[in-house]
Length: 335
Ligand SMILES: NC(=O)c1ccc[n+]([C@@H]2O[C@H](COP(=O)([O-])OP(=O)(O)OC[C@H]3O[C@@H](n4cnc5c(N)ncnc54)[C@H](O)[C@@H]3O)[C@@H](O)[C@H]2O)c1
Image 1 (cartoon, rainbow, N blue to C red):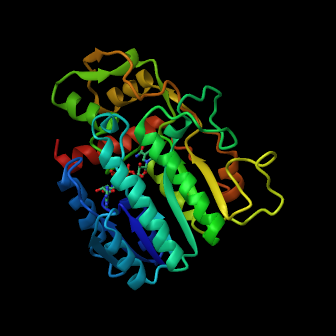
Image 2: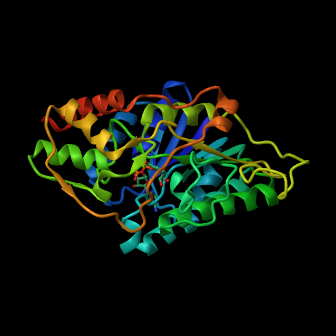
């Protein structure tokens, strides 16, 4: 099949594209290659995809309305996996407008492309951050998510609402994927594991927020990619019996579905750091800091719906995943 993958030079987009290509699919990947983090890392990921004859890369901004419309018109895509976005909770405190362009206008341009080109299935990245002030754990897609605590989270919730509207109005099957703190080889330099590893190897202190008293459902990248590749074949169906009063917010009378993709085994930040110390053979010098605005205390995914749909749920243990990340980091940066 022919796929459009957005954010293809990004952490998750790269892994998903590689899997699709290895499975024999055709992939057109777009990315604007912005410098939110080291562009060399994005280019190095693309270098691994370019040798596939079934891969085409186009440098394009999601907010470029005409560019995206032309891409869809000429592309002949059967499925779209939309992973391009401005990510990061903390960056959204200081740079809110970037999120409006990439995540709101960008998402709308993708929806319009799907609407006018009869796309068979749109899968798009949402985030565990939509659970915001929710306290009931584990987080379930049956819970309401109306109280985000960062603009980033609000744009992800907005993406789910916009997608529902397009599923309802135009019958486009859409699947929203709430990822829980993804980590692993080729990961993001703005995320904790990458920052800690760099600092610890350099002999610098690491910043530990909320004195390490946070729990995260860290999810290994291969598990995320596996779930996405399985889900692209699970096309949401409209449920005529669904009602707002009795149905789950994760489904609808429209062909619309939301899943959590998380490990369901949250670990404390201190245990995560301990696993990294072990993998690196270095004890971290910890700079204990208060909670950051926009952060949440705990995340934990209820993956019952995901498992029922694809008979798979993430389960890589953090010590295994961190060891694989450290191996990749040492070899990529020659340290
Ligand atoms: N990594 C995580 O832990 C995590 C958790 C929850 C949700 N997500 C979501 O998953 C998706 C992928 O995240 P990731 O970790 O791979 O991030 P990433 O930043 O590595 O990848 C996103 C890619 O999108 C590109 N991009 C950004 N703005 C763009 C624009 N306006 N036009 C074109 N391309 C643009 C970037 O250059 C980047 O290569 C994002 O939607 C993110 O919000 C990620």
